[in-house]
Image (cartoon, rainbow, N blue to C red; front, side, top):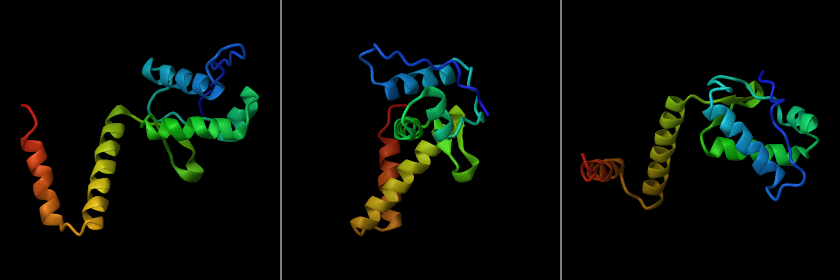
Length: 125
């Protein structure tokens, strides 16, 4: 499990604590200090270490997951996601969204795939 003792909360900053934590974790991932596959501390543990509310850290993890920087795997914890995994996850999520929208509007799979192919063919090469 990663030790996130590099995170510092500046109580005098105009930036909200959750944003400070999120930005520091993202910077550490981008800088390679938190490698793909690294398990982050639990929400409760990090909240305790930083003297923050559990909901504040939960918000950080939720936003990091929405950005594709981490993935939460239930009891296995929150893990830094590899860039390739993030790309795969984003495309998978977009495909799931397309399927849901198509189903909502009663568009069959074949027609939805045609729309997707048309979108690909319209991209610049």
